[in-house]
Image (cartoon, rainbow over all chains, first blue to last red):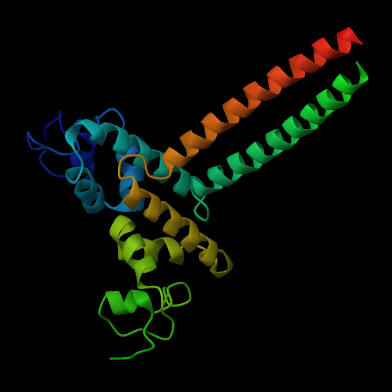
Length: 112
Length: 112
């Protein structure tokens, strides 16, 4: 057992190679991060997706994939698309309030 | 060859069983829908996710998974999390404009 194995290799019960595709993004201190992403996408798919990306973008890709995976585990029907719907509703409400406020200004300007 | 196979079974080159978990959501007329979802999540993961959901929620789950998969293919680094960031920026801008407009009303009211 190598105590320095990354969380992914530990989870997959394998030796962590020097050029491990997972190790820069899955430290052994956060085993849950890999468990979530693996549960939704599968380890092979995540590895494939990372390999297709330039190295400097992989950390951000892992963060967004982790976020989506956690959302899908919390809300298996809507995942993070549920958040998009909520934000769109919030935008509509704010825009309605803005239009109302601008109409109030127009009334107010006419009175002066 | 069964011309009535669903898009998933056609893609997976298998017989489409009567109780196929994919067939209600992947009609043969839209092969791209299954291809996208399979590319990101893998057929086995999608099947597992659907099996864990009550039947009446599966159609919505397939739609949100398809949406996330298409976003990930279009934007492999940020996926639909990129849309969430855009919407949050839009909310901030609208809220700033609202605050400014409300401040204008306050000035205007003080003048009358």
